[in-house]
Image (cartoon, rainbow, N blue to C red):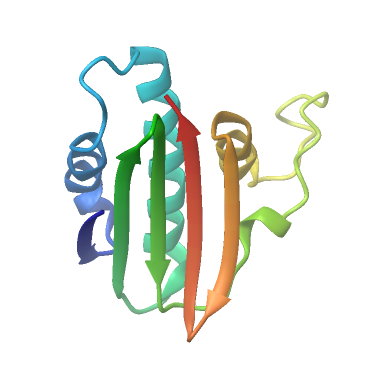
Length: 132
C-alpha cells in the first residue's frame, strides 16, 4: 500500500490525483478514472475546507490496487465527521429547490462500490473501494 501525507489544501489537489493515479492499472477505462477523480476531489476538498477549519492540517491517503480492486483510505485528525450519514439529496427536485450541499458525497457513494467511515484514535478514516 502506498501512502501520501500532504497539507489538506486545494492547491494540493493535483498532487493527490497524481498519487491516486499512480496505483491505477494501465488499462483503466477513462469513464472509471473520471468517477474516481470526482470522488477523490470531493473527499479531499471536504477535508481541506472543513476538517480543521479555521486552521489547517494534514490528510493522509493510502492507496492500493490488488486483485482488481482499488482501495483508497483518507485519514485526518480534524473534527469528527461521518459524511455517509448525511441524507442523500432529492435529485428529483430542481437545483433551485434542493438544499445546498451533499451532492458530491451522494455521487461518491454512487460511483464507488463501497464507502465506509470510522472514527478511531482521534482520526476520521474514510475508505473507498472500486472494482476495476
